[in-house]
Image (cartoon, one colour):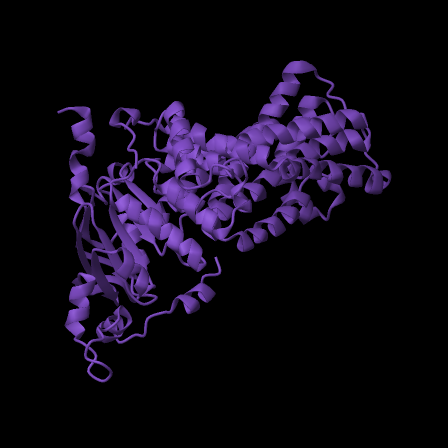
Length: 274
Length: 270
């Protein structure tokens, strides 16, 4: 088999999780989590705080071992072949971030080298990504001096250094101002056009509505509903009290499915003090 | 989006190359923050000046000058400072999300720990260079020739690498930079309860006994022997066998804390 086929052959596999469980003492963070994300699509993972979204992402990104269940990402088993998975994923997380002491360029080159690109390729790739994410001018400044939006773009660029088949975005726009959010959304949309599979966790329903092909609603460590945004909206039915023509918003879908009111961007921005 | 060609990626990255890249990262930190590294390196010099000029007048060293007694002690103490700085660096990486980012790369835990260890050893070398220079300026001299001097420096770095593993373990255990401050608080009594600044002979008997067995004392006494500097003669068993003890203590610490650090790093996934 040609090297290139071998390399990309599995990348059409998307994400599959079956019955994942993770307990912390008495608390079941994941309680039979199953999810299928088709390759080249965006799945929005919605749920209240504490629903287990981040636990699910950390298991799928090989950062956390599940107690039970199976998962494969880009065709490789996350528990048994974590190294193979890591060559094929990118992670933008609440928890994963860039090295603030280093410059944007140094970050990109470092993580390229850690992904085993050659020095020359890592350098070229860093230049490309800096350009694409509008960071060329700030390339040689320490990331500590970047604005929140710039740092998040660098975060996103860093997670793309290895051109991952699967990208995990764990609340990628938390704490960003509206303009920076829209900017990050544009970058995510551009990625999706190239066949990358994206799993996006978010508390912002409009974000999922904007970006996701498929939405999975999580509560208490499980998926409680799954479908396209329109399917989920149809499930709740039109609002009978106000006007017949108004479709329910995703907020209402969320409330209907989980019994929790969703976090508003305003509240979440207040919480995200990181 | 441009995808790099598959041939640009070699899937068999060796852990040594990964460790070298991670070491390089920390060297880049020095380059980015020269003032911060300079302050860290000069801090022990400040301590030496304080002890030499504020307390030194009251220190009657029977077999030489206080400077000749102090500098080897401070060289050992500088190695101990590595413990707190490495613990702080490990917790800072965790707090900033860099640890998670690196763990999501195809890099083994061994490489991560080795990269940290190598970088800290270079830090130790820089610390030694600064302190030796400061000592020479203050009039301290090694008396026993090049081989003994190099052996003494070797023992110091051997101690440093042991403290590095203790520091990495504590950093992984404590998790937050705030709690790493507790390590800084602990380092001082451990450093002072030794023959670094004064002879254990001058302490209450039971306390002096503990100080004599402090790994820091073994290294300090051993290098005083090797440099031909005054030892402020203590005739305990530990002091008479300082060189073998200075070789053994770091080995014991490494054997205990290196596996603990590996275990703690693996348990980040649980």
